[in-house]
Image (cartoon, rainbow, N blue to C red; front, side, top):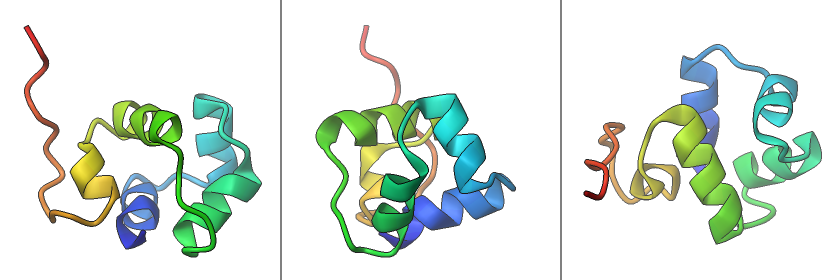
Length: 72
């Protein structure tokens, strides 16, 4: 899950900042970033909205950070 850490670092956020903004515990964010734990679908959606990116980017399936267009 290198992109979960990459996007946090690009945005100059600490894990604590992400915890405060998303409600996801810092310990879980750390485990996601280190590959010790896979994020739940719910937490992936929270992170994607927070970072304004796609689930595919967070899951390292693409290098494109731009989110998909919103559903109409």
